[in-house]
Image (cartoon, rainbow, N blue to C red; front, side, top):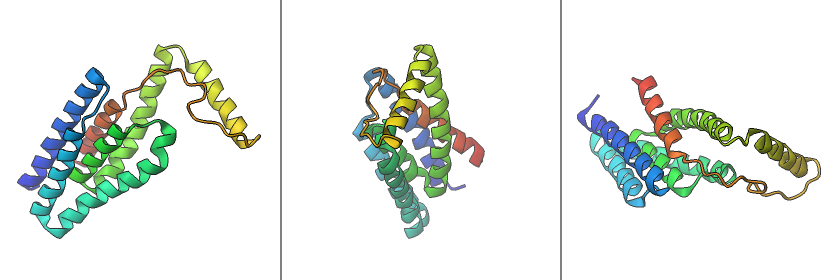
Length: 172
């Protein structure tokens, strides 16, 4: 493992910590953090392995853009969360970000269940989901995902941080 790769790991861990802190405190993941870490990831990977490193970083960013554009709006994932995962992709590359997104999705699902149980909305949320699914698929009625929402906000930065750190632990 090169010194620049270790720097990418350190930057990712610091970035995830700061993003989680700001998301919990102000409900915001700042562009200054995510964009600068994306740029650093591309620069460091390019310096480490040349054009291959640059493509490695850009591939990580591109994959996140593609998947989050397809799935994030319907899942209620915000732009700051998407940019945070893009920064992980820029720092760590395509293979890593695939594992990180998979772990993030699993952890995010578990955390969402915990939040619903804590707020005692599990039954109403499940009923609303199945009602919306029935309206959309059987009756072909236009239904927005937010219809019937409880208004409870779920900070996804924790799932991204835990999923990325788990991917890091599994990788090494």
